[in-house]
Length: 106
Image 1 (cartoon, rainbow, N blue to C red):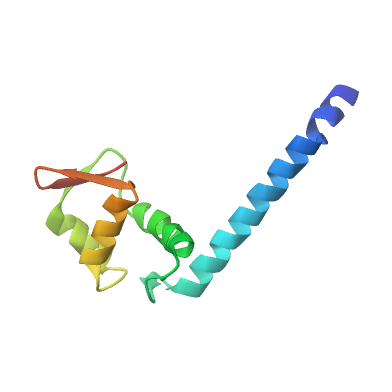
Image 2 (cartoon, rainbow, N blue to C red):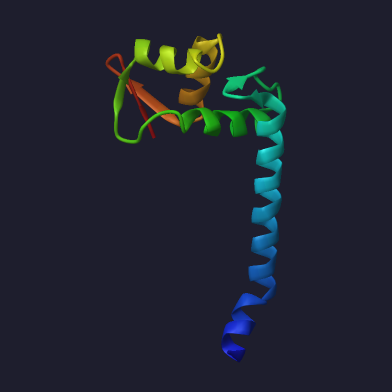
């Protein structure tokens, strides 16, 4: 019991838990501010906020599935009309990759 308590209450463990909770709270705040229902209200100008949105958007794609560009556009358009910018941002953030007319989640 003492050994377990030392591991759980170690400064490094507590610091990591605090950091994780803080990051999760930040991400939830960004999602609340920029997403209403299932719609992205606007694309954030801040890179840090935009990355949170891009991670949320990448979750709309299945792992291991290849999508045509048209399919990617349709999925993104369900959430925001500027699908071309968001598609490029997903690739630029290395959340999606593309080759030979197909895209897939990384």
